[in-house]
Amino acid sequence: MKRYQLLILCALLAFCKGPQKPPQIDGMAQLLDEGSILQSDSGVEPDSQAPLNDQGQAQDSQEDLPQPATDLVEDATNDIKGDLALDAQGELDTPQHLDIDEVLDSHETVDSLPTPDLPSCAPKCNGKQCGPDGCGESCGTCDVADFCTVGGQCIAPPQIEILAQGQSQPMGIAIGNDYVYWANKGDGRLMRAALTGTQAPEELFNAGYNPWALAVDETRLYWTDILEGTVRYMVKTGGPAQVISGSTSVHRGISLSGTHAYWTSDMGAIWSSTKVNPTPSPLLPGQDQPEDIRYTDNMIFWTDRAQGSVNSLNLSSNEKVSLAVLQEWPMGIAVDETHVYWTTMDTDSVRRVPTTGGEIQELASEQADPFRLTLDEFFVYWTNRQNGQVLRIAKEGGVPSIVAQGLGKPGFITSTATYLYWTNSEDGTVTRIQK
Image (cartoon, rainbow, N blue to C red; front, top):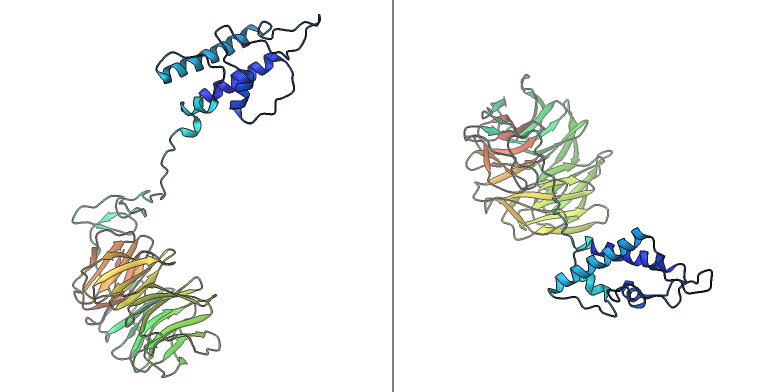
């Protein structure tokens, strides 16, 4: 406020003195020095360069000031004097030269007012009773006996629904259109069932070996086989199956882009092939035992269980980055817009790291052979092979909660907006539960 009083004072004094050539000055302090605004209690000295009146005599600018302007100058001057005296805690001397910087430094200005703290993250709790807010906090908690849905509503614990039973070691699972697809490792069959659970399971193809991981696009189903050592595809309505890669290695994880298929090989390579006129080639040789893989935004991410690493490859620049090393048998992997998530079976942990690299965050520890995982907007979900549980935790961290338990070796897991789907290799079931 004091800054504005000084500016008003200076402007009025300049007006009172009449038109004159602006001085070439550097800053407000020099203007005050040259003008000697605060001279004495008697007022402002007449300017030696003041304009002449009609008789050729020097005109006293203060005497000819309109009364309101004179009062305003006097009030502003007295306010500044009073504040200076108050700040100094003593009488105010009437200096010949006033240092404007000292005056302004001793008073609060607009620039020095505290800036309110603005939230760096906008919580997403509108209409939610519970669950994470997306900023590391909670929108609320449910009663002990209730379950918090992914939509943030407290409900009675949902029941597990069995979509298929009597399967032979079902492993890989994928969602496409209105169906859930899975691979029976035990008898080599590729199967599907309606997401609604109203249709009996349907056999699509009998591979005869050990199909492992699945991926689907708009029209095709792709899978790896850990016994035959092949990568195959077929239309989603059923065979015949076409071979992309022959018996060259034990192939494990698989992921798709719009134009390519990418998969991992126990022989130490990341492979790729075009979908049209498939021609497989080693995209990145020299790895150890790459396990699971995900494609997103012209990047691929994978775990290498023997090397103990989590890695990325930019498909445009061909730049490989080791996002995490010295991991203990990393297995499943999942990726969102900002982070990479994975499980480590030897240390029974679920971890994450920024997709561009950085600090590793342990989300959950003391698990029981965490295997594969999946994501939605707020949660990370994973399967524990040893104790038969499916669990979840907020992406930012917190306390894990059990989604389902009492299962027979849950393995691969995937999700839609409202349900989780997973296979249970020991039970021979394919199940789902509301999120």
